[in-house]
Amino acid sequence: MKMRGKPALEIVVQTRPEETREFDTELGHVKMIPFGGTVDCDLFRGICEPFGVDTQITNQAGVRHMSARYMLTGKDCEGQDCHIYVENNGYFTNGEAPKPFHTVPTFCTDSKALAPYLHRNQFIGEGKREKDGLHIRFYELKNKA
Image (cartoon, rainbow, N blue to C red; front, side):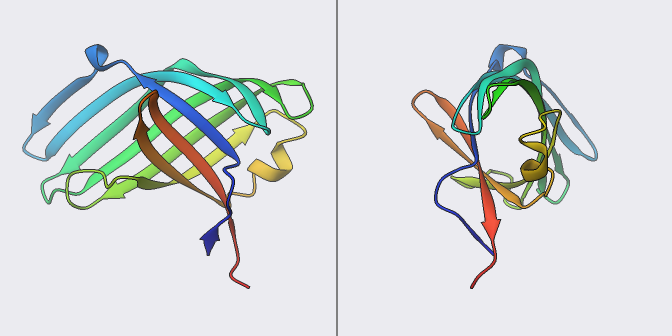
């Protein structure tokens, strides 16, 4: 499988580091990072609601599981009001996320126009920090021909 050129969705995430919570236990490290953001692409335009959270758990072996969950509110490609729920998961084995890092997203939407596309679960995510924030891009996977 490989990614297609243009992202299906791109979210510019703004984290709120002052609200981050974390702690250590004998099982590892837990960190929760709240965020919001914006989305402006052909498929969807709107916001990432400000109650999104990126939960990162690093176990004793140094493997970090990242699970970000958030809701997008805005208009779909047909101009209809809608929501997109995103659960975005990734694993990193060296304790630090590679740059860029890759994830596996799952989408759920109430948009009649977007549901047939987003509910197929054939996407990969890529996260990369840029000047204006963390960019999360979701690409459709296509079969090698």
